Image (cartoon, rainbow over all chains, first blue to last red; front, side, top):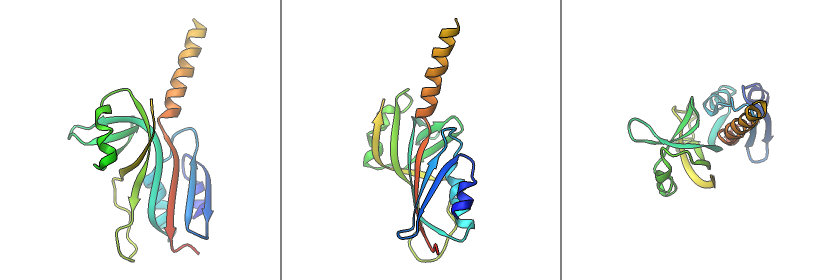
Length: 132
Length: 32
């Protein structure tokens, strides 16, 4: 799995802890990393992803349906799941303010059965780290 | 003129660096 992940576009470094099943992925500075692809590669390698957390910077925008999203790049955005943290971000929608958020992009549904990750990935914000 | 372009390039690079995925952490099951 480590080798498969390390070969993915935008991945600088992969560190795997066999003890607790934790996988740390450091992206390259080119910003080409794609979380959905990492989930797929991990799943295809026969390992089940219990959860995926991400730290990402970008702008808060509201899409055509009124949904709040974190726009990391013009072609990469994550829908933000409404919660207490996301309410604080609503006032930033459509502004040039850049934020760095930490949150959960994926969590395996309850149960022991192995299931393929569902797309698109949605971001459940747990922390607003920086606001500029 | 060239120095202005250089400043613009540095600013754009700084903005691009801010707007990206900085870290990903996964917890996996079934790893041997």
